[in-house]
Image (cartoon, rainbow, N blue to C red; front, side):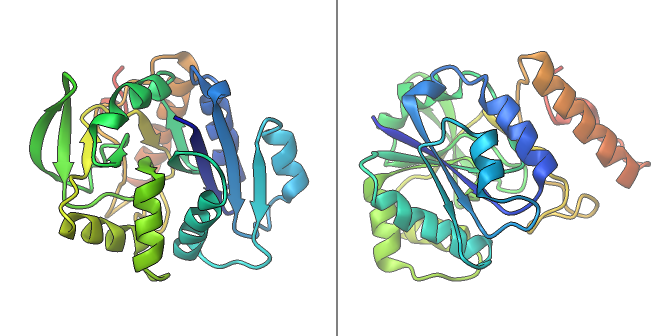
Length: 247
């Protein structure tokens, strides 16, 4: 399996640096093709991205800002111009378990061509499945961050779904209607560390992955920083740091 790690970026430099540090410790990263899809950021340019990700196979910068949904879909179109088999979508504000590539390679071919390595608290499961000896959750919908899709699934999405708002919700519904199971690893292999974004504000809505194991001290430090930032916004919250990662 030839794997593209597709990272969609727009500003948020401090998170991008953390993603780079965490991603660089992924076992098997040298077997993947890293491709950056920047939505015309104002905080940095292509030269900065080249220095941060010197091993990136491709860095594409949009000529103007087209927004996260259109950038996501255009990433799919750009991916189809490569010779890779699988696209793993990562946002700039993710960190990852160092064994996630091994997990993907062991289990992806047992799916319907789509799964997620990010068990988001905002996307509840509808069933539990044992796949290749591992516990997965079936969901009605997932976000694009952490999604893993085959070339065939992406081609189907591009062929039938034009650009739109909430594009990941649209393709989730489309794939479910076709009868594909959307499977999510019970253990999050990615963690979301950006409290404020298009789907959360850090107070009323907090987006994070369940059952994430930081495993090494750099990830644990990032989780601790996330929790400290969260407590500043929500001083009365009883949410424990262990919600964001096994400690």
